[in-house]
Image (cartoon, rainbow, N blue to C red; front, side, top):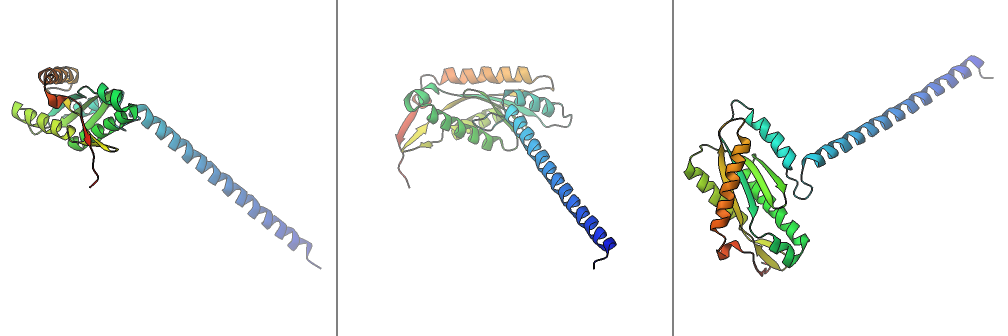
Length: 215
């Protein structure tokens, strides 16, 4: 006949194991819930600071991140960039908003590729901005950077059986001090509108579509 003490000890041991297993399950469930909440919080923070279409920082995040860059005492010279697309409304009117979204995403990708590790953002609509680290702030470098960026943005954009070409007006201006971002953006914006007015009568400024043939 089993020893009552041995039976009691076995029952206690089994109960302890069951209790330990249950506690472990609760701990794992709590850890999973915490991880899920942290992921949701990170997603909400990202959504609050990034443009949902292009994935670039939005206007609010641009000014916050720019202020942090300008506060760095050891920073290299920075150039403010402002650009928007020429006659972008034509894309939406001719091909629909899905095509317009595709163009905006392509422009965002090209701007990000041009900027590399530098800050770029979508301010709204077809308006973008950035802060570029520059080896110098002379006019020749600024003009060269403007031309190169315009050329990148004007490259063909495949859209189904068509290829779209859109152009952008770009303005650049040096940021001369940690509190001069607003003034630099104002100067870059003025340069951008000057470029837009100078190119207003040129055919290259207009939307062009051609049949896109697969290779």
